[in-house]
Amino acid sequence: MARRARASFSDRTRARGIRIAGVSVILLGAGAALLPADKGISSDVMGALLIAAGLIEVIAGSLRRDVRRYEMTAGAVTAFAGALFVINPETQFFPTVWPIVGWLLVRSAILAYASTHTGGSVRMWTALSAGTDFLLAVLLIAGLSVAALVVSIFGPTPPLIASLSWILAASFVATGLLLLEVASCEQEGVQA
Image 1 (cartoon, rainbow, N blue to C red):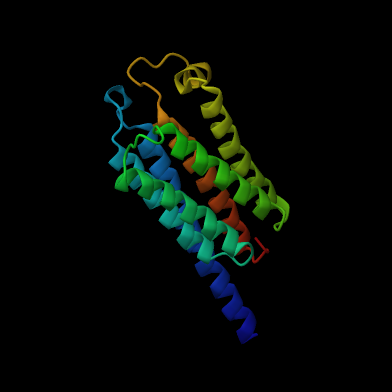
Image 2 (image 1 turned 135 degrees about the vertical axis):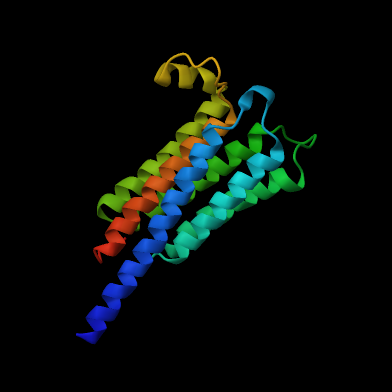
């Protein structure tokens, strides 16, 4: 009986931490979407957002019972991409978009593999998060204007000029929603 109560408390505590992480990453996504893109976004701001989201994801990943290693690695890749922007904002070797494409592709591969080691709704949300990152990378590679995507979804938004901040926002929201689903499963004591 005491062991069951302890496991239940642990599930609730773990779920609370993951839920806070999910909400935090979604708020970072909202912050990224609201950045004033008309003058361009500094590499430091983009890097700081990626580092913050990555560290939050590493912490949330450490609270997971299943796929802990993969989720922490996905967070570390995000933080590393952010560090690239902070340490060396733009080099002659690659323009700003290529570290974002690389981050999205590596992260989507990690999450796709992690989804094969989960079950139920968490598997679906992990695959959805991986698919979102992959699709965003493909859109960047294909050169599709993010502004065209935003206008097609939300209609004309003259004061809001879409940029890479929308890519970050979309990825962060998908990650946050995944973490909220994991938190829900953790609270119920379901393997997540």
